Amino acid sequence: MRVMVLQHVDVEHPGTFRDFFREDGVRWDVAHLDCGDRIPDLAPYDCMLVMGGPQDVWEEDRYPWLAPEKAAIREFVSELRRPFLGICLGHQLLAAALGGVVEPGTPEVGIMTVERTPEGSSDPLLHGLPDPATVLQWHGAEVTRLPEDATLLASSRACPIQAFRVGSLAYGLQYHVEIGAGTVDEWGAIPAYAESLRRAMGDDALACLRRDVGERTAAFREDARRLYDNLRALVGSVRAG
Image (cartoon, rainbow, N blue to C red; front, side, top):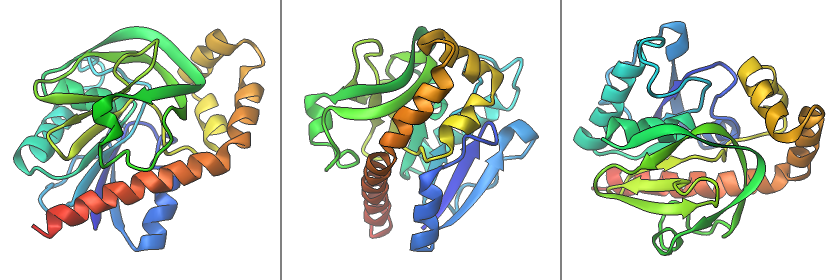
C-alpha cells in the first residue's frame, strides 16, 4: 500500500497512523502544503490521507494552495476513485471540494462523544468501533451541507455532520482519531489552537486536556488501529479489483 498524506501544519501529522504504517511496511509520502510543497502525480497512490490544520477552507486568498488541494481531492475521489480519509480540516476540504458547504460553527474542543446514524452503524470504515464513540474534538468550522450523494455516518448535538461518506470509498471525520500521547502539547503550542482551548475549557485547559487524553491514550490507539485496519481493507478490496 502506498499513501499520499497532505499536511497543513507540521504538528498535525498522521499521528498513531505513522506507527501502523511502519509496522505494516506501508510506504507513505507527505506534501507539506503550508511550506510550499507541490502535490505530486496521484496515480501511484492507493490511498489519500488529508490532515487537520488552523486554516479554513474558504481562505484561498490567504492560502493559495487550498485551490489546487481541493482539485487534487476531486481528482483522487471522483476520477481515480480510490480510498480517501479526511480528518478535521481534511473532512471539511472533502465536503468543499465536492460541492458541500463549510461555515463557522459551534466550537467543539475537548473529549466528547459522537453517535452513528443507522447508515453509520453498517459502514465498513466504522465497523467494530464503539458507538457512541468518545473522541477528541478541536474545531470551530463545520460542514453544514453535504455534497450530493453523500451519506451521513455520525453526528453530535453541537455539530450534526461529524462523519460522512461519498460513494463507497471517500470519508470525512470531523473528530480526531490519530491522536497520541504528545498531541495535546503539540497542538497547544499553536496560538490559534491554544486560544480556542482556553475559551472552551478555561485557563487551565491545557493541563486538563493533557490529563483527559492521557487517561484514554490506550483506548484512542485501539480505536485508531481498528479504523486503520478497516481503511486498509478498503484499499485491498480496490486493488483486488
